[in-house]
Image (cartoon, rainbow, N blue to C red; front, side, top):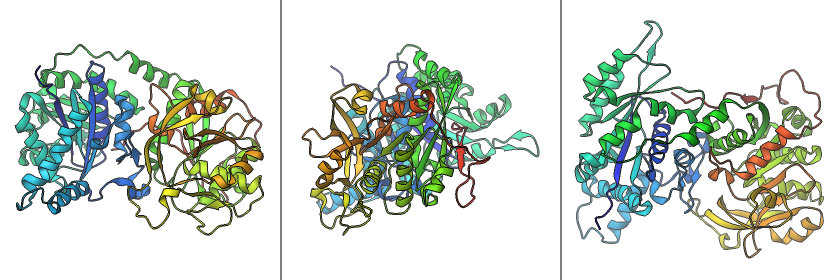
Length: 566
């Protein structure tokens, strides 16, 4: 039997960063999957960090975690949500990881005394990740996004590597897609193609000739611009396709399908596949457009200045809204501004639920505890994720058990009542990178709990990213006081979820359920949480004319969540 021939698609970007290469790649992945193909996605990032695990969320956005425990770029979240496939360690590669691997091999004598160089050693390492992803997933098509902007020094080894892949695999097995900005000049009331032309020329100078050019614009650029780009960039007219700003990012696959993207790719790669069956995806888009209810959720965090720091949480809330016939409005609340219960009363006026997501470090922790207290005392639905679960436990120890100094050993190493503590196998001096509990782990669900109601299963698997755990020294005392431990590790040793009974929803999960939510299949915990606001009316305090915090700063409300950035 002949070995299966994987097809390779490479997505590059030019002119400026932030064009939506990831959304373009993810949308194409969904379209090809709708044609019956098995798709795997990949992001090659030019930064020197080994992975994004130690990077500031305020600079880079969230860290996405795969099943196998790889800390990756947030674009992999888009890939998983769109193609509905679980990715792996070969799906994200940085310049730092490339050099790390090559230098370790050199120290071990793997190159037999050769002079180690960019070509072939660095490019071979990059290619190995591309080929290993294809092999490990047995994908029909591998879609690889090259991070950064064409022309950047950092991206050159990646561009050289994908050029070599094209040479090795042959033109019928490789397709190059270049995403470019077509800016609109208001003074002359016209779109300009010259930046796109220069970007394509830069890419061609690296030995890569795009087969398809995606035009990123706010509105249709017109046939003249498309024809000009086709002529000067040496691509067929039907291969110049618009990617316009849409009200919902989940409309992008349908828009690109209408533009003929998947059809052009299928012809280029000589794929014998049926037309795309977009029935399910159209249903998702239809649900988004026809929602009749509104649900307001306060997201309390320390990174709210950059919404991408909580990207998967945002999307999971929106997915839940799709299935609950609800438009979820996120009220962004800076945890440092919650200094007391009066500030909480102002911040949470008229919200349907409070969610506290993950994070690291002691900044803003006391404000999160104030939020958890407000939720508990006022019966506001509460959802704590990772750090948010730990916050719920700390607040319970303070407010119910009476331990006013209750804390985590992350913040008070010598504290007397550290109800959250470092895992036993992590004691001592440990480095920051790659030392956490990462990836998917099983969780045993206790019957008769909210967890059991949501999942309907006795054992589940969820993804983790943390060092600290529930301190079992306080376990029995907390249970006696009314805290329900609703999920544990299969051996019962580790506490995975906690609940307060008799509430619409008051639950903390040590894992990160947001990494497994899909637009066509909302995560059960997010679905149950957001459902509280749309179906169970509550008495709320009268609100002021505008939502302001105690410093009289207007709180951000995200009412139009789906705009693609230029």
